[in-house]
Image (cartoon, rainbow, N blue to C red; front, top):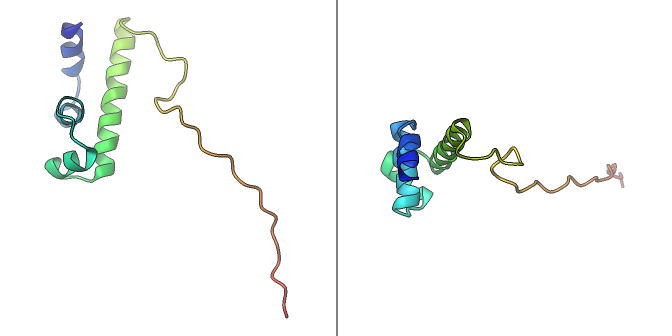
Length: 92
């Protein structure tokens, strides 16, 4: 299992690998990772997310993992939009 993980991690870009390592092995928050790497917090989040997706695809391609039932990593759904009636401003 460790050999498979090392093989999959070798497919990541250096930036993805360093962000993933900092996040999960060192336990750093995204803000701290972003400061150390020299980019924004949102870029750090996206980099880690893309690294996880890339590892997931690698595992699925090799047959080491079943594809997830849901297509997205994040299963949180956005709230429904509110239907507001348009009101015209009354002139006094």
